[in-house]
Image (cartoon, rainbow, N blue to C red; front, side, top):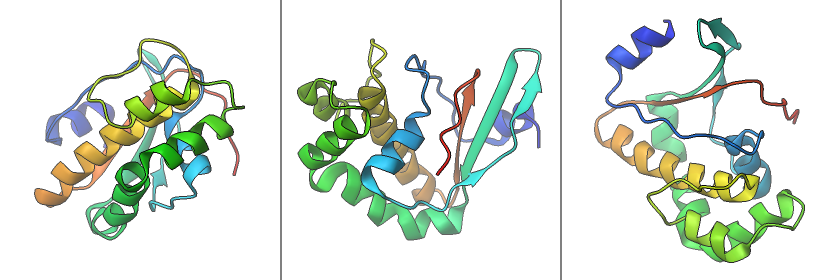
Length: 149
């Protein structure tokens, strides 16, 4: 299924600028140790450049949603601290903690703050997906450095 088809059959689509140059999902997963059963697609190229897709299917999303809830909402200060530590300890802890709970996207380019915002939005849309018996997909555009596990 190509990008246009995915957008056509999706329940919604929202774009966020990833300015830090790191995959926000990777930062979040490394910092928290949460395993979400993510399928990583092979990077594709279209008229706008490189596109890298990630998917959690419906059944897996139902199973891992409690882990995502725990990582984002159970102890946001601890999660924010883990994100700051993962990114070298230079981020503003208060901004990272706020991004875990805000329905906005950070204006700056701090990878810990972006990862926190990503986690918030992933949880928000994961809940919608589970309630409508869907999976979830996100994509990154551009040349991000791969972060091998």
